[in-house]
Length: 120
Image (tube, rainbow, N blue to C red; front, side, top):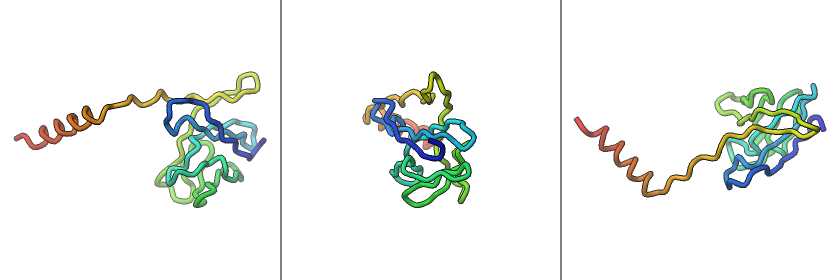
């Protein structure tokens, strides 16, 4: 329905990008956003849409549906995914999952970086 966000889990990677907020705008375009406000762990799918702007239900930040940019204070925006409609289904193009890095490898990499910056 136009202006009524729908939250859906569409992946199983265990990352927050598995849950998207899908909605149809007033002009019939479909938008898929990461269903998580950049400020807090609040589902954007519980928000309100008016005039191409999604209002977060937790603390009322406003996001432009075309770009994901904040319209009330443009320092952080919502993540927007490319979409297309196929046979009545909205498909969102999600990025591949981030590779898992064991803590030991991460710590060794950080130590190497620190050592390189300290070297004359």
